[in-house]
Length: 134
Image 1: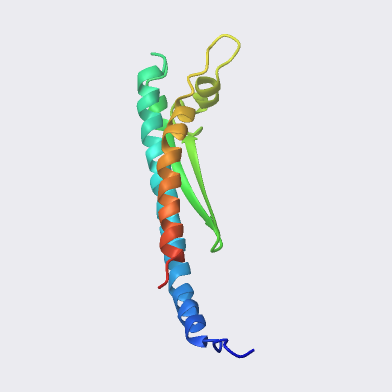
Image 2: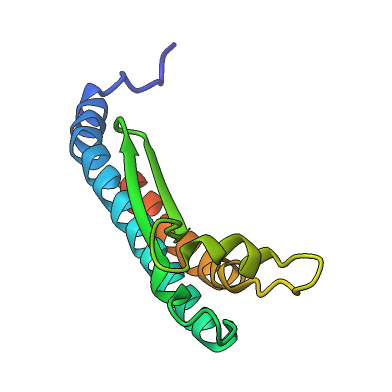
């Protein structure tokens, strides 16, 4: 065992202190990234719907909204889409996915695809910031 350095508890204590501060900060940052991503998807979905919604559904784009829910410290969920209780919100499934007589618009799907790389990049930054401690 000669030649080995003794174990330094100072690094362990610094890591513990970093995690005690970093985890709550990362939880706040993740919630902010999810909320921003949901807002971006909602905004683009509305823009897409304005451009593609049929003339008989002028209120449909305004029915698109989002909610962010937190379940304990580790689970965050964003629900984005038409509010079925709002004006023309119940048309959401028909307009988004189509029917036997109507083609799908895929307005929300396109918005989600466009937001995914931005969302992933922001989540990577949160993770990187949380793991850097010295």
